[in-house]
Length: 140
Length: 140
Image 1 (cartoon, each protein chain N blue to C red):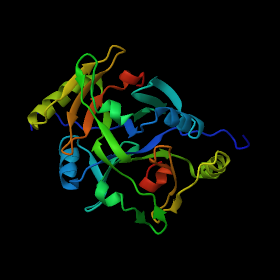
Image 2 (image 1 turned 90 degrees about the vertical axis):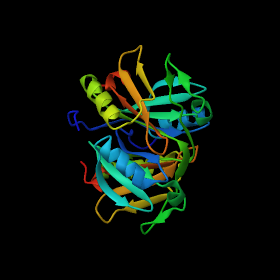
Image 3 (image 1 turned 30 degrees about the horizontal axis):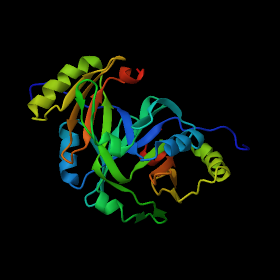
C-alpha cells in the first residue's frame, strides 16, 4: 500500500426507492416530520435529516441514468428496502401515539436482548421503516 | 393533533443489498476501510460507520423475514442501490489514489454547480457507491 491510510467515517446519503414520490413526500413529511431539501417530481425527493441526507428515488427514472453534465451512474431498486431513524427511549411512547393518531400501523416492536428497542412500520411503497434507540448498536 | 410534536432527527441505519455477502465484506473493509460490527454469513453483514450503521443484507434471505422472537418485517431489494459516504475535499486525492491502487474503477466524478464534489464507483453487487463532500448538501 502506497497511499496514506484512509477510511469512510460517516454516511452522507441513505437511499430508498418509491415509484410514487408524492405519496413518499406526504408520508415522510407528515409521519416522520422530515424537511424537504429538494425535489424533482418525476425523479426524486431529497430530505435533510440531521447531518445526513435521506434520498427517495423513483427507480424507473433513476435506472435511466442522468447527465449533470458528466454521466451519473444509474441505480434503482425494486422490492422493499429498509431504513432506521434514531429515537430516544423516552420518545418511543410519543412515536407510538403519533403513529396511532396518523393511522400508521405498527408492524412489530422489538425489545432487543442486547439492549435497545425498535418499532417497525411501512411507508406507502412498502419499505420497512424503523424507529430505534441507538443503544441497540451500542451507540449513543 | 394531540401528541407532542416529534420528528426523526437522525438516520441510524443505512441499507444496501448484495447476494454475495463475502464479496461485500471484502470490498467494504478493504476499499472503504469499514469495520465489521456483526455478521450472519447467510443473511447479513453489519458495519459501524461513525454514529450510524451500514447494513448489507442478502435479499433472498431477508425476504423470508426473521423472528427475534417477534416477527421482524421482511425486506429485500433487487437492482442497484446507492449509498454515499462523506469525504473531506482534501481527502479526495487520497481516495482517487487508493481506488486506483486497489483497481476500483471510478465510474464518474462530479464537480457540483452548487459546490461540493463526488466520486462514483461500484461495489461487487453493482451498487453505486459515492464519496462526496458534505458541502454538496450545504452540510459541513
